[in-house]
Image (tube, rainbow, N blue to C red; front, side, top):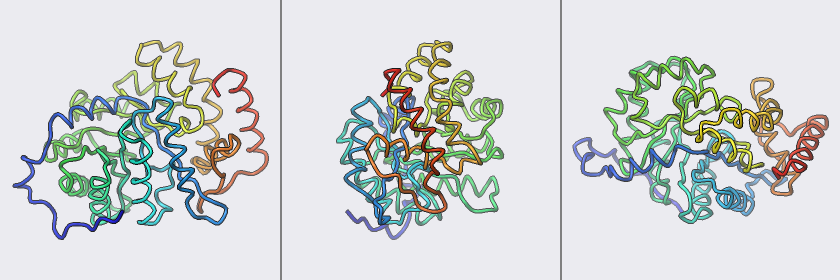
Length: 325
C-alpha cells in the first residue's frame, strides 16, 4: 500500500469537527496495559522477513497483548527505509486483524513524520507514537510545535509522546495537549521516577495515559507514582511474564510483581548493558533460540557473541522449567 502525503496540512479551523472524543477516551483506557514493541525480523541477506513479522505479531495478540507498536526502537526504526516502515504498519494491522490497537511509530523530520502518520491512518492504525526529535538543538517551544504539527495532521488518530529528555516539563506537555486534544498518552523513558511523578502531575495525571517507557525493570517504581501501562520488548519472547507483571500491578500486589520482576531481571540487564548497545540483539537472540525469527540486526547494533548467547540459553532453560515458556 502506498499513500501519498497531502499537499498541505489540515487547517486548524477544521480540527474540532474531526476529533472523535469517544475514540480518544477509549484509547486512553486501552493504553493502560502492556504495550508491545515488536522486533523487525531480518533474513541473512538483510531484507525484512515479513512472514516472520506477521507471525510474531500474531503470537503477541494470541497471548492477550492489546497494543502493538510497529516501528518502535525495538523494531529498529532508525535502520528502516520509508518503504519498510510503511509496510511494517500494514503488516501489523493485517496481523492483529482488529484484535489489538496498532500504535505506529513515526518520527524524524516533520514532513516525514506527518506523511508516516497519515499513512498509518490510511493503513488502519488507530494511533501513532512520535519518537523524540533527534535534532540536537531543541527548545521548549520548538518541541511543542514539532509534536503539534504531527498531531494536528491526523486528528482522527490518538497520539502518544515518546519522552526521553528530562528537560521536557509537565507544563510543555500540558500546553501541547491543550493545543492538540488527540494527544492521549505519554511513553515516559527518563530514568528518574521522581521526575516522572512531577511531570505527570504537572501535565495532568488523569488527563493522559502515562506509560512506563523503560520496560519491566522500571515498571513497578513508575507504577507506584502514576503509570498505568508499560512498554515491553521482553513480551516478544515470554509474553506470560509481562502478563503476570501487569496482573500483579493492576491488583496492587507489589510482592508478586517483584517476584515476576526477578524472572525478567537478567534478560533486561543484558539489554541495558553498555548503554543498551545490545537492546534489540538480546531480544532477537532469544527469539532465534525459540525458532521464531533470525538473530540478524542492522548496524549500529550487532549480533551477540557466544558468551552472551550462552547466558540467554541458560535463562531460557530456567524459564521453561518455571513454566513461563
